[in-house]
Length: 132
Image (cartoon, rainbow, N blue to C red):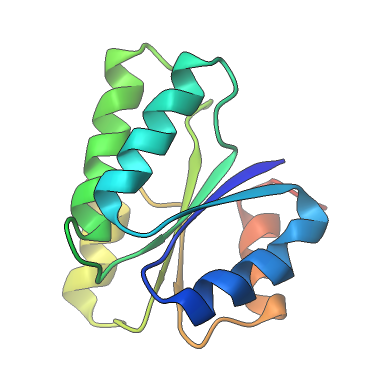
């Protein structure tokens, strides 16, 4: 499995990479724009990400905006419906507005509130149909 972790906090980057590396390759982006660049490159190389773990509050470009752009890129590149990259939002924000935006505007598959644990990550991967 190929995963993109989008997180601006170095401690959280290392933690998530450590917890997820047993399931496959982990790449890290430090903000939403970097995520878009890596995502686009992966699609262009015909080796797309299976899942993106996206923080919401980041510098340069926030996670909500980045996820919407990723979904637009998938449409432009004719990614078939049902084969889009799974998106799991990871954030300290649990208010209704952010949750609703993530699911309905960004088409997120899951929403995890921090602190992130191994159990939460595994459950999100299971719910997304990426592991048994």
